[in-house]
Amino acid sequence: MPRLPLYKEVKEKIIQALASGEWSPGVKLPVERDLAHRYNVGIATVRAAVGELETTGILSRKQGKGTFVSEHANQSRLYRFFNLVRKDGIRQTPRREFISLRKDRATLEETELFRLSRYGKQQGVFRLRITFSLEQKTVGVSDITVPIGLFGRMTKSGVCDGSLTLYALYQSNYNVNVISVSADLSAEAVPADVAPLLGLKVGSSVLMIRRKAYTYADIPVELRSSWVNTAECKFHLDQGSSI
Image (cartoon, rainbow, N blue to C red; front, side, top):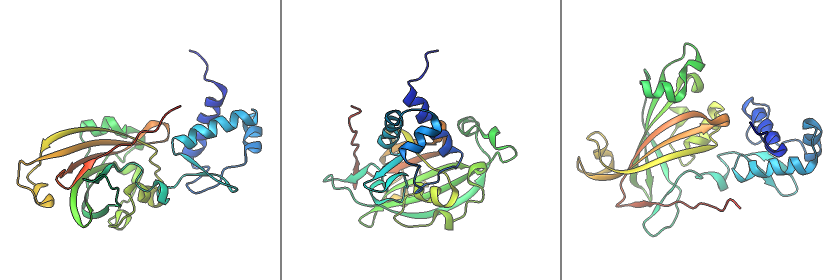
């Protein structure tokens, strides 16, 4: 198997340190010179590794201050993974409202996705339902599943209403840092228990978004199904150049 370029090896070592909790969100990393000494490489190699982690949003540079572990609560990254905008394309900060939270047994799909065996006896999941609104109009309902073994004692206050993203709350309240997501979109009929929350008739067509969220080392930490009323908004994605 071909060996990774040296800067990618350094990048993986930094990710391992982040995953172990050595540097928490908001914490400043050692300067490039110290990182180069730690990993026995040149400063240019460290700079390339840190640059890639900055591009993916894991790290962020602050002019004149240094490099920090990114925080989801940071205003510039607050809704990095929220892709719904008004019909006219204007992006607005959504507001989230809590509906319900309960413990449950995991399905076979969830057991395999979350690899729940890693959490020992804590094989269950939390199931959370929220609504989200734009301009005081409810536009979506999300059913969210996370492993108990990773989130410990999730409570209503830990995922409270407001304009902060759940990922910011995961980070601050449960030390779970979401760094990437994957999503599938489809048009589906709204379920009977979701329709009233969206002000729709049962069977109305809605946008369905099924999303998986991952932390370091591609470990899945959340499974989310969202039903969106596209009469009030639309899905919009900006994808930057990788060059």
